[in-house]
Amino acid sequence: MKRSTKDQIAGTVEEAKGKIKEKAGQFTNNPDLEDEGRSQKVAGKIQKKVGQIEKVLGQQLKGRALRSSRRASGRSLHRSLRRRRLL
Image (tube, rainbow, N blue to C red):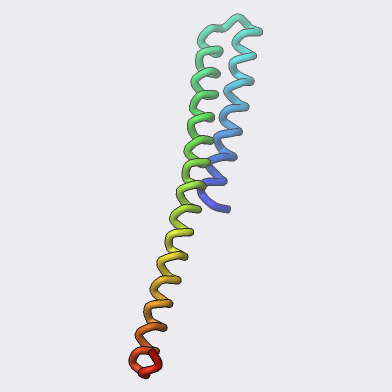
């Protein structure tokens, strides 16, 4: 499993834990638990976004690497044809 996917899953889990703590704090009238839940929920959202950004950047970098390798193979083919005087 890719790191970006792991971050997205972990972020979702943290967000869910935070929601549970926040509701438990509201139910028990405990403002400290409620604040801790809010903080954890926000941290989970951030971690999930980081995973999404990593995924997008990874796809873009992968696409660039593919394009540059195609260019390189095209250049080497061009050179070899020129050496053989076919061009």
